[in-house]
Length: 215
Image (cartoon, rainbow, N blue to C red):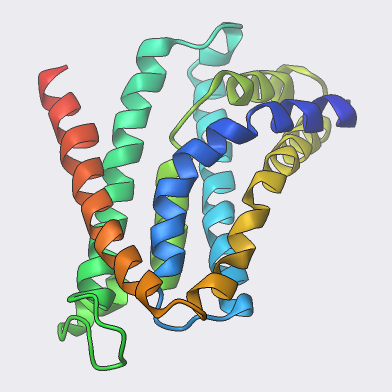
């Protein structure tokens, strides 16, 4: 069962990368304090938020009986993805405006409003964006939830899902090398901050609000 769970996680790794990379790469590359320890901590906070959201979705889906269906509902996943993009965009925007605006690289840059700076804190952003990205539900994730709930006793199902999640993690290993690049190319930080701002607007408006209103 462990091998099955890890293999299932590996099968969804590219999907995870596709949804997480546009959030994580500009966010991690544009932080003020660049270090391997801090970068690893932010990645861990993001991944923890994502895992928590998976557990929340699994509990909710099980409670309302959706997991009795072996096949994932494409309409449901599309709606959840819209909210994932919208809330990811909000988290990135607040971080950009609260901490990094106007994308300077010295300690005096950033918003002067204390509450916005606290809300846009890098650690808060990592957790909130992880929770938001966790709303993306793919078929392997749905299968893992199904197997976790109906594959055995509660503890067995819990560990099945944990090993499934572990199977997705190797695809995040390249992110741990971001400080190596950021420390050697000063322009990367400015480019990343502008990119983060643009991505946040794109996520909120074009992948969030427009589909919410017109679909």
